[in-house]
Picture 1 (cartoon, rainbow, N blue to C red):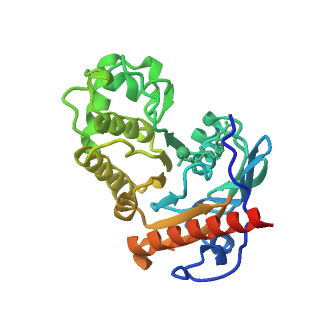
Picture 2 (cartoon, protein in one colour; picture 1 turned 30 degrees about the vertical axis):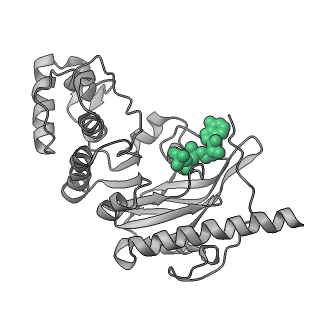
Length: 296
Ligand SMILES: Nc1ncnc2c1ncn2[C@@H]1O[C@H](COP(=O)(O)OP(=O)(O)OP(=O)(O)O)[C@@H](O)[C@H]1O
Ligand SMILES: [Mg+2]
């Protein structure tokens, strides 16, 4: 079903973050140029477009993600963040544009294809099976791993491996035999993250991993994300509407507006206040544009 978005003409240009007019930046283009000579870039895209029927959601997305980097994706509801993540994990196919993993162009026809390139996704609904235990969820549908074909593994071995891995990444669950349905939202999210990384995935895509979580539960997941990035070198793209979370977790932020990356900011170069001011300024600009269009 299409949620029709107001069609607003894009107005890219150049301008540093901090200029009130977000529309006067073309950081997507800058990001693309930057990535081309950067051997540390593990994932990048060029000119990704995607529409659903008459609705053109993504209009030429250039992003790049470096090894071990945590990149936050910011933007209004319905701007296309999840759509971009779904393209990067092989769930949707882009209409145009290219995806590169470690500089090699890739074509994903399924989530499995993306997984084979080390890209794992944790969706908001987690895709865990509530009626199964922690260890069963951890190894569900994972037939080939670094441990060999799992179908030959005994339950005892899987339990041991689950316990060891959860201890390694400091996820506390009382028992690997506990059913997921008996766990809190934060614990479930931690198990989902463990599941996504147990096979040493290189790139993790997290779509609102902290949604609807209290402070304590969020802290649990935030610590895990930090551990995976700092100690295991996992590169991540995180979608979150909460700037506080993003500033705590991310190295860099990309703002998605009107189907393009309108801003590419290193967290250390900006502040929450500045980002809020930029987003509010852009919101007002769009309201003004809407008013002008109405008057014509
Ligand atoms: N499968 C689909 N079929 C038709 N339209 C879709 C589909 N998926 C997404 N859309 C539309 O594309 C637009 C972008 O949706 P998307 O879910 O990517 O937004 P989002 O930025 O993740 O929003 P939110 O912050 O609310 O999660 C929306 O208008 C949505 O209705
Ligand atoms: Mg979304």
